[in-house]
Image (cartoon, rainbow, N blue to C red; front, side, top):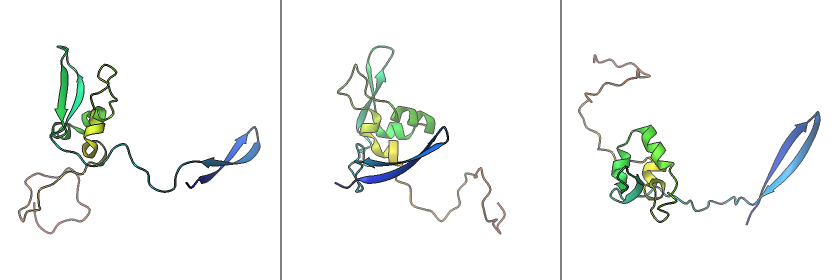
Length: 127
């Protein structure tokens, strides 16, 4: 195992101290608890609904949620009342962390959807 040495300068009441901190952080990549792979139909536990029933959803449902809603759901930890039910960040790693979604291939036709920001280079064609 390799160790990383970090130097830290600390100033307290005008006294400057230089400390060397040795951490056991490996310099080589480590396995992550999540990955960027998922099966869109895999289910995760969302909550216990108002009727007391467990509510599950799949990764495709999560992918369709808006950014803030998706981020909030991906931040949930396991519910202590359902410790064996996996949450979104454990099941939907791509949607929660990598956000690599399959896209349609490009077409030769222009989009009918206007952009909200101006382009960096003006076009010679009228819109």
